[in-house]
Amino acid sequence: MAKVDLHVHCSERSGCAVTPEEEQVKAAVAAGLDGIVFTDHYKLPDPQRLAALNRKYAPFKIYAGIEITADDEDWLVIGVPDPGLERMDWKYPELYAYVRARGGFLVLAHPFRYRPKIRADIDRFPPDAIEVHSHNTPPAFEAEIRAIAARLGLALLTNSDAHAAKSLGVYFNEIPGVLDGEAGFVERLFLLKDRPYGK
Image (cartoon, rainbow, N blue to C red):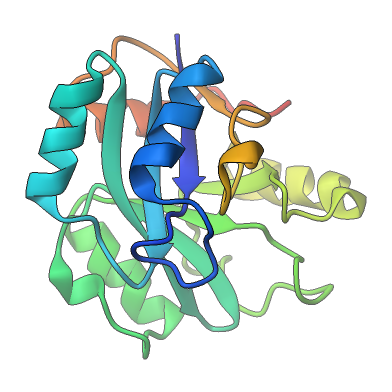
């Protein structure tokens, strides 16, 4: 099993983050993680920069993702390195179809963070996973999050939503197999739906 945090921000691409990407990588390595996914707001990592970081910190793995707000909820998209995602006007059904058509992994991030009801239609358009624990997921809603995951067949994720290096290492997911390229990594994320995991 590999320990991977699927929700990490850096100051280069997220205005709310305080730690640069390389310092986030170093903090994750120091915390004993095996990999992270950069999921900055509306901005994908540069592929060449990501490749350079992967070479420098191998065997640690850094993957590309993005965080998008749609229908008053925040969504992580992993495995779709498409600049077409870098928009601020998404509606959730449209985002769902876009990710599905490209084989990506879709996560409802920190549900109930801003309001006590999920406004997006996740019954008609279920994501692949939902965050049950993070620094920004309200603990009071854990039972409800777990019930949603059970009803819709979603994987339960534990991610940091780290905007600063000090937040890394507290939450992570155990991903089956050995980490390698992005396509194989995304395939293993889908396996989490058959083995929901959450601390």
